[in-house]
Amino acid sequence: MTLLATSIPGSSNNGYVAAAYIVFFTIVLVYVAIMALRLTRVERGLRELGERSEDQPANEIRERETV
Amino acid sequence: MRRTVGALLRKELLVELRTLESVPGMSLFAVTTFVVFHFALNQNTVSGDEAAGILWVTLLFAAMLGVNRLFVADQDQGGFDAFLLAPVDRTAMLLAKAIALLAYLAVLELIAVPAFGLLLLAPPLSQTMPDLLVVLVLADIGIAAIGTLVAALAVQTRARDLLGPLLALPLLVPVVIGAARASSPLLVLTHSSGPQGRWLATLALYDLVFGLIAYAVFDFLLED
Amino acid sequence: MSSRTSPPEERSENPATPPQGSPNRAPRGFRTNTKYGRGLRPLSIATIAALPLALALVFFYAPIEAEEGFLQKIFYLHVPLAIVTLCGFVIGGLLAIVHLRTRDRQWDLRSYVAIHMSLIFGVATLITGSIWARGSWGHWWVWSEPTLVSFLIVMLLYATYQPLRFAIEDPERQARYASVFAIVAGAFVPLNFLAVRLSTEYLHPRVLGSSSNLPAPMAFTFLVSLVAMSLLFATLCSYELMAKRTRMLLKARSRTLGFR
Image 1 (cartoon, one colour):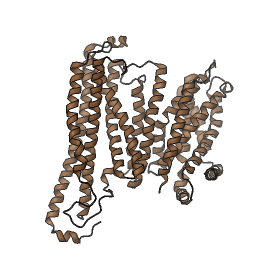
Image 2 (cartoon, each protein chain N blue to C red):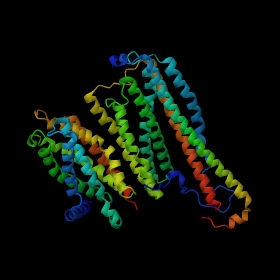
Image 3 (spheres, chains in turn cyan, orange, blue):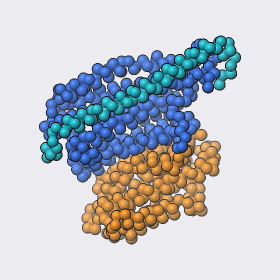
Image 4 (tube, each protein chain N blue to C red):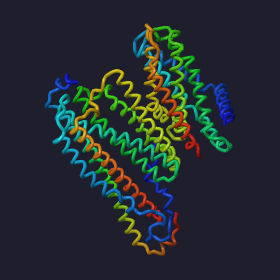
């Protein structure tokens, strides 16, 4: 194993370590971004729901057939 | 329970004998694959690790053909519903199908292993028996257990032919490891030692663990 | 597999949401989100504390390893990722067992999220392992590292989890079959690890360093990294669960009000 370590120049090793950590954090951040997109969609849906339930009077909704 | 398994097994084997839809196809596939390997590797004979690899990959893929067909008739012709209406332990179906698959694998190997000895194997087959037989039996039990479980899982999905092998192959990697490593020293010209105990132990452990898990879990697949 | 059926969170099949007449009250029997999100805040705070601490320890406290040099620092990232991923798969199997016993679909949801998250962490494991192999051996893939190899097999297996789910339309059956798969696959993980370990040791000794015989500062750094990674996993799972439940609640409320 020592042979292997010495056969590869030391400077390039920093690059590999950085690459590994960067990959990891990128994956986590991509995940967070996807979740953020999903949650904004949910928020929009909730807002629409709130608006539409305000537009209609309550008794009309009660009469409506629920699934 | 034993009577149910016996009855189901008899039905399976009778249907297979009459329709001959699994075993001839599997055997033909195996022999053809050996020919393909001859051309792909550009070799007249193989031995050792190579031989073990070719043999086990071929047996595995041929087994996949059998696994794909295992529950198809039941699914398409209402066999599941009929079985569920009967007042019997549902795990009987697992046992019957697994034993049937084991039987198909046995016939497959009866044809494929001599063919392998004839076509590709350098050392004579006779010197590898009965050690090879032990490895075959142990590996077959594992393939039968996982194959039946995966077949039951895949048959009720939409992409059943694709999903079956896709699920089974990674699950069967330990079997391939154990079987190939165990049979490799058997298939060399200067045949000296038997299979290493650790690989037989791996196969046996695998069979035990997944046999039990399949037994425990199969019920949940048949609930409709 | 041409048209996709929806994953578990799309279906508001939650048995606790019977449609109600009044739109202003939450449907009876359905827990509100505050209960589910409750664990998320302490978890995320712990993660935010642990992760930078782990990073600081890795780069400023842990000594440079004699043989591998600076490259060995990947060890503190790759191995905790691997351990957390494998545990995540096994936990997914355990949650699936609970689901099959209680028939409460919440457990299936948890199982799904655990496995899904482990898949993501598994991809990260494979990539970081490959980078480490490249730095150590000069190749992007080595068969002589049993962790990486058994990981590949496990990932190939779990990659079929989502196609399996999407290929079954009936949601109850989808949950049931997915649980069966999760249990079988969860049992497979340790067995596979054992088998691959046996077969590779047979050929070559382990190359990329083992976690035994570590000097104290390294062992401590490793432990902190492991804890930080586990916290991250738990936080992200909790986050995902809350997002899914919010979506289900939204759909349920939409239906209650008679929309769509």
